[in-house]
Image (tube, rainbow, N blue to C red; front, side, top):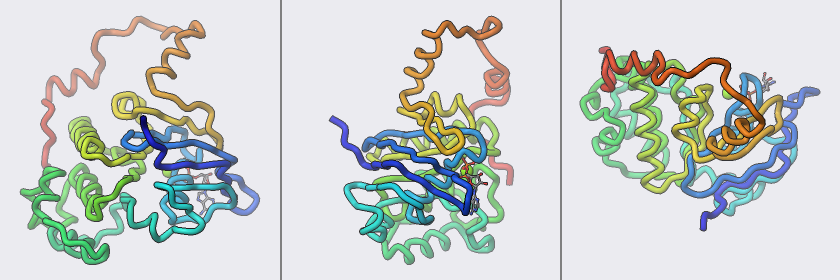
Length: 254
Ligand code: ADP
Ligand code: MG
């Protein structure tokens, strides 16, 4: 049986008079990839940052791996990995130096080359952060979330702005992290990505969860209402054409 690793009950976040998160509740199971989907401004990042202990909630109850967010925020910090915005890195430092820096902050010793291997950046160990392509920067920022060997990893739109190859490469990376035992919470605007990657998704709109289930179940439920796609779907789409023509390998543009 699966175990609940994150529990969110009646979470509310107000910014002044504005209610950004309006009483949402959900559980995340250990070992799953859980997606938060929703239009811009729905409250996804706010929700994540509250669970990550980076933002104050207005009300509600949150536990992470049995730890109460109000009582044990520092213990929660130790077992989570949070993907920082890439702007937060020292652009002039080499990747190995950045990893040592983070390891020092976490008080952990890590094998930097092994870690870079897991995100396919071993060749770039001596490169500076600012010299990386967009996809490489994203992969590196995911590597930094792994330094403290977290039980739970938070990824806020990790594939936004990436080309199709880099996106696929990142999916493999995220699956690999999950397969090694971590729980992953991810936000994305790409529904194909959510469908392929997520075990379950919560769809958030204006601060409320309007649906929560596996992608398969949500699709079946819609079809059961009589919904049909307006035109016949071809056996391939333009992205298939693109990948077929340009290959699955991600490119290093430097
Ligand atoms: P999402 O990640 O789903 O796009 P956010 O959680 O970033 O949404 O934002 C939810 C809403 O809260 C948006 O309307 C946003 O403008 C507002 N918001 C976010 N952060 C702040 C803040 N620090 N002060 C005031 N309003 C904010
Ligand atoms: Mg956001």
